[in-house]
Image 1 (tube, rainbow, N blue to C red):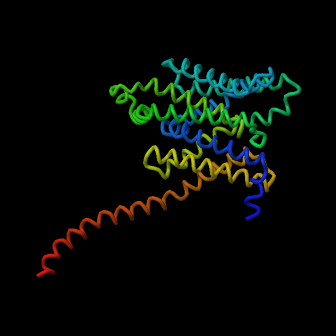
Image 2: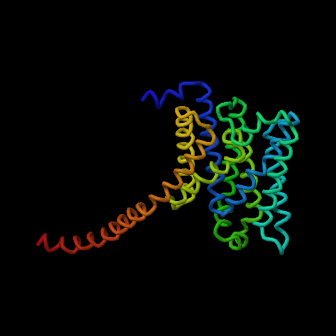
Image 3: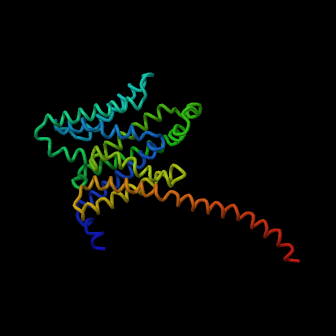
Length: 299
């Protein structure tokens, strides 16, 4: 058991674990609705589109979190504006902005000769260097995201299945979409310090996608995504400590591996559910038979 507890006896690893757990729950709340709405490609583009904002903020001496949020907001506004054209699909607009923002980020980085050391942390995160103020930012982002998710739960649910019905019910699907975009920006911006701009997408989508395969309700899917993300953080930190690998990348790799394991075990889950349904369907018939037989046995 020593090898299991040894890494978490170190203070900075404990801080990294707490930051990772906060990021996992934050990404689970936002990622659940992103997966249900089929917005995974948009989430990927948003996470990569943060690069120029983070690079510019670090280069100018500002807080990278502000740069990440500003860059993600520009991405969201650009996608919304380009998506209004009837001749272009939203996927085309997302792909173009994805490539353009990524190229802009590389250009900004290439213009600074002293930026090479910070590049790895921006792209792949540095969870072991998380500071107390980063924990406070993650906690605040989690609180805001949970409040938004609870306030717009009905609107998110209706829009995820039928936007027209959501509009007729007065649930304002366009407003719900905008709030979901804001939740995505908050989750990605607050979590990039943990796993980086290139890997935050994995923590945002993989746990929610894995939980989607095993869950039948939205709350269960959200809780499952939080559990998968938390396990990925703990296991990733443990593996990276003993194998001397990058912590952020290892966390993301574990999350993706759990998703594929869930895919492989899904047929087994279907069999278990079928057997439980068959048992439930047989129970009323058996109880009815025994009720019929009870008078004769009494006589």
